Image (tube, one colour):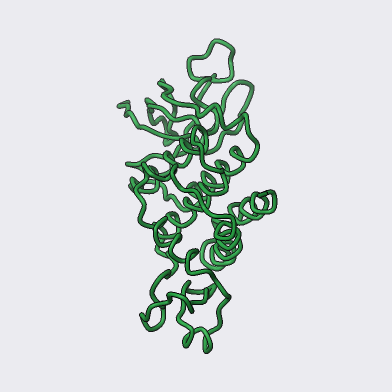
Length: 249
């Protein structure tokens, strides 16, 4: 049977039978794939190194009786440093879990795959606080999912929110007038501007995000509430943001 090569990130791995493993592979071209790696848990297996969560590599797959089976893998990066810091590991796990939840089987997901890869890279090797990287991921994730919050323009009437804007859990920024009718929480102008910039920042610059403490605190609370309203895939992110925010000094 014909085989195919894919570039993927292992989002989940479950042991199966005596020496097999079933993995969930995130790819740019085919979205989410379920793949069986037979014999990969044997000590001398060439597949062992590429079937752990967070592994990024090239995988040779073959479909047998409707089941995709891994034949070869070339590990390119395992983001090992994530395992040396619990905060970075938990942030990476939350981000990858969200990507897995929204990525569809058989559908291209190039932008989401790229976001996942860059987030793992900066969490593993970047200098920014893991909470800042996860906040940036969350903003960009929401935009890709079609739920990006309004920031510097009122979501209801389009007026500027500078100085008097509020944050509504349904739509993001509202001007003072609309907020008085629809409801909204106080928010710093700098927080809204930070959200706007993170939504537009290039992936290669995500590692440069360094938020002031007050802005970080507001982003954790407001994005957590907003994400809970719009994306069920973000529950783990909400919990992780809250924990990381509470530990911020």
